Image (cartoon, rainbow, N blue to C red; front, top):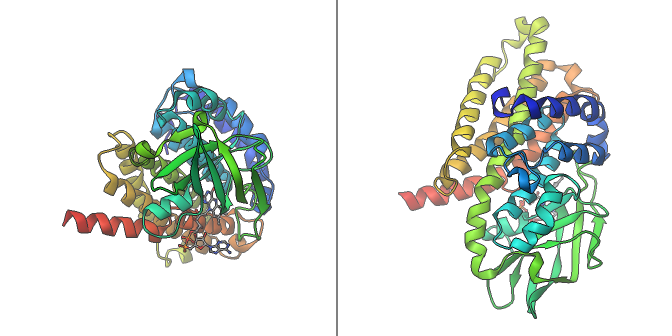
Length: 366
Ligand SMILES: Cc1cc2nc3c(=O)[nH]c(=O)nc-3n(C[C@H](O)[C@H](O)[C@H](O)COP(=O)(O)OP(=O)(O)OC[C@H]3O[C@@H](n4cnc5c(N)ncnc54)[C@H](O)[C@@H]3O)c2cc1C
């Protein structure tokens, strides 16, 4: 979003990595290459732990700096911005857990990118919003739990990766937990081909009688509701980074094509100045929210996340229209970004889900 959010001492290394390692493979990632090399290198530079203390493998900065890193990645590759979000979100969950054993075991390796991690939380988040049934079931077994069930698509997975998910208990309540790398109870199944985001390491996840010891529980049932309330604002605000990166890249495309074609591009909706104004407003609101007590304003955070989806859709469509046939080439980032923006608007919380939650909170307030 801006250079002042990420000090040059960290930003320059991350920018060089994005330019030299990520940019050349953005199209290949869209078509199916998982950027494990980039993810591990970004982790070594602290790219998933901007909001974590240095002692936990982080950069000792704040949430705004982490959003900025996701945006810089997203300017070049939306799929990898999503992977960066997955990894940063898992670090965020571990930072917020009351379970010191899980924090000690997983937080630093995830923040440094030594363990790559998927967050299979869409189903639980949608379930808690009254949208769908929960897929994973847990039952108590001694000091831990046994978990069974399947999630249709979870990203940033592969051999040796870790999974975080949540399950419903037979007797009521929910538990959120880590499935460590190498768990034999976890099977990954290939997904049908997607319209984009093919390199995101997205699999169908099956858990068969998975043993979750107490050390791997992030939130016990009694603490679950409070834990979700703590992690959700960061979950949503970090996702805004994906939208911000797409809007910035689209503004650059619009600006570049207008050097030659402004005489005709001027008849399009969503001109550069309009999008720039809305982008600056979203950016300012995101920074304001990231700097607040995150418990305070769930409605404003939901609205900002929805605006990131809406503006991403408008900006990428406008950029593609400004670019014309050149933007319709398979090699053009303009057409790739249209599909990436659609993903930002359908990944949980999807735009329709956000509007449902916003509506419910507005009704409550009235
Ligand atoms: C590329 C990609 C990556 C994703 N990565 C993650 C991730 O990392 N973590 C995560 O938790 N979720 C992930 N998701 C899921 C995503 O966040 C949404 O939950 C999902 O797109 C469904 O949302 P929806 O609004 O379409 O659901 P709705 O419109 O409410 O659809 C209802 C339900 O039907 C299911 N459904 C529809 N079609 C199919 C199908 N063909 N096969 C199986 N189920 C189906 C959907 O999962 C959904 O739960 C990913 C989805 C995609 C496309």
